Image (spheres, rainbow, N blue to C red):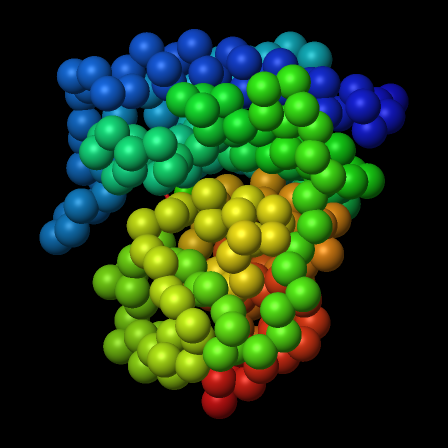
Length: 261
Ligand code: IPD
Ligand code: CA
Ligand code: CA
């Protein structure tokens, strides 16, 4: 792939422009909702499907030998060195509730490792982008270089998770130990939480039961801003599962000790 960092950012933005047309056609409007889960509620809408389709089509038009993995339409070319990993709407529960805390996620893995990514919130038009070298927020023609916070103690930390209801019993107990030690927990934030951490407003994000497409775009955004992104054992989280994200190594070590024992 012959793309320099600014070309990567430009292509990620182009993909999000295409997806934005689809998602904004249905946001805060009457939209068809299907439930993907027996015995629970995991919604998907026509907006999720349409957005993923336009992103996939454009990627494969430009890079026919690259891999694509998307939440709604699965995988193609799974052995390719470059893998584009798509969650067309991360936070469909927020989307169908009219909350602007969802986002379109497009990550690029190179040889299995997170390389670049974008989180786009189409209603506010905030774009959190990692072009493989730096992480920035592009908003209203301004470009802000992202940097995580220096908060090192749990007692001063703001913690985010989408909802503790998604944790299993043992996970819930471990998570609760960390939450009890933090200054402030906030819920319901999906991909926004990781971008607010990359921006220095939030210090910790803890989740479980994730898939690669929930975090592929977010790992490089957080890491290039100075954050630490692992699973609950302190290992790579690039495949999904339990996720611990911290603003710096000191805070990560403090939370990891509570989650891993
Ligand atoms: C959800 C979000 C959320 C996470 C859930 C996911 P979706 O994705 O990533 O933050 O906690 O486990 O299902 O379904 O809205 O794309
Ligand atoms: Ca998701
Ligand atoms: Ca999704």
